[in-house]
Image 1 (tube, rainbow, N blue to C red):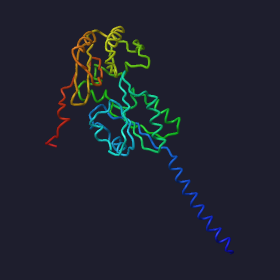
Image 2 (tube, helix red, strand yellow; image 1 turned 135 degrees about the horizontal axis):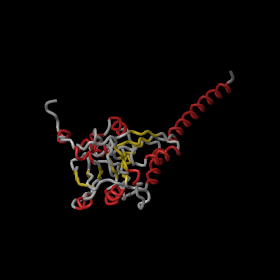
Image 3 (cartoon, rainbow, N blue to C red; image 1 turned 180 degrees about the vertical axis):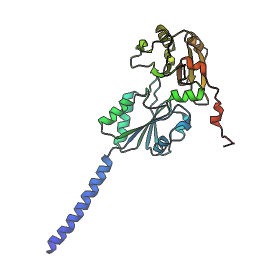
Image 4 (cartoon, rainbow, N blue to C red; image 1 turned 120 degrees about the horizontal axis):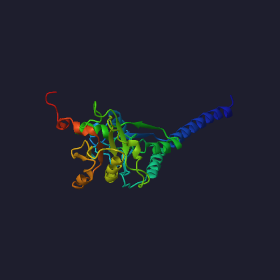
Length: 287
């Protein structure tokens, strides 16, 4: 072997190592991070799932909305950047398009991104729009379910969602639409006389309570149908107001409801269970 070929061999090995190192570095920097769309539950921080908490602890950045409780925010890792995207019915500090752009931007920086949504992300949370934006940019994402507000509210108030011979089904609906002048197709929720009617659970409906009351009565729901407004469900500030479809607007006017409020409608309200909610906030010394 000549001296020239010997040194040429060493140079080739060195160049190959350098190219491999640079390529690996560039690949890492160009690689997108991952996004986890996580349901934060309805308010009580202890209702977060084990999987959700594990993934939250790995976050580099957390985008959260108005419905995520302060107690849960206190558990976020200190290293994680917090970004408030402030969504609330009728009061958006950031548009949905902006939120989608932020998710993509942070993920493209190679960060571990958590999108924290109140309740369950698959129920009236515009999850499809965020998923579409991530898919369009080839960003890997996963969805972690949360305890939806309807189920949690039922548990924390004692109002069942279904009950034998009272309500065999439950219907979730929203009173908010992209067009503020739009109303639900009331005929889809028509009352069935001498039949088993579903329990109606209305998300984001407090600001359109009068419309809701009039609309349901227009398709046959009796004026004395029970209705409950539940503010700040599952938290220490939970407040429950019960009335009838006919009287609920006037009853609501007597109370200053500022927190997120779920609406439940149906005969199940008259079958409220005598729960002891204080058991959920104390240690069972006999355990």
